[in-house]
Amino acid sequence: MKQADPNEHDPFVPNFDELWDYSNPESTEKVFLDLLSDLKLVNQSKYLELKTQLARTQSLQRAFEKAHAILEEVKEQLENGNSGNELVIPRIRYHLELGRTFNSNKEKEKASVEFQKAYELAIDIKHDFFAVDAAHMLAISEPADKKLNWNLEALKIAEKSESARTRKWCGSLLNNLGWDHHGQGDFTKAMDYFKRALQHHESVGKQRGIFIAKWTIGRTFRSLGEIDKAIAIQKSLLKEIEEKQLEQDGYVFEELAECYFIQNNSADAKKYFGLAYDVLSKDIWLKANEQKRLERMMELARKC
Image (cartoon, rainbow, N blue to C red; front, side, top):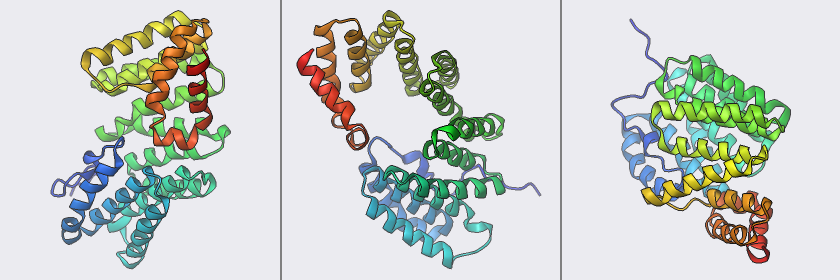
């Protein structure tokens, strides 16, 4: 008898992971609440999984007390439930979301403990997708000297996985490795990873991934001092936004502003710092974690 693939989704249960809109956790919360009551009667494991994701909608809204309250409910139900493998996936997801809640609230050490538990459980049952998720989160929560190794571990698992869902991680992980090297000042190696990320996204036709990869390449050209190339890429992205009638991208505006600032083009720098601030000042994560960055945009929009 063929063993079930732990990486595949139960075809008889709604795939709520595909219903995520990470840019709008409030709307996702409503969708998940509508699904909860039905799942409770049909599948306890999936019901508890969904509750972990409901907690994630709260942590993304920075409602950490609500997130912890939901996860405490999940913990109690896991402790009272089957001790075997039946509930191992919700156990993994419980540790992942508890870790993400701690991490979002800048409690890095507590986060790492939970991500490590999730990683070990996922490795134990050979669930590639969640092993990669946990490893990539450890790369976020752990000190700088450990980030690179965790991202490399995540990429190794993703590239070798037989699960198509898990291999989709490769683009994000290549991006993360690019930023690891960029943060270390190795801009040439960072560029190599960002170009690999672009190739991956192009191979699978992921348009948002392609857009982001191009942006990172442009950003790295700025770090390499090739400002004209950096501007050319950001302008091409701005044109794409206009032609496809996409939402305004504050990061493109910010990058153009920084490039023009380096070139002492005060008029364009001021224009794009202003546009960047108008968009990015509404970003809940940036407001919580990058206040000085936002203040700089606002100041340069006034002074340039």
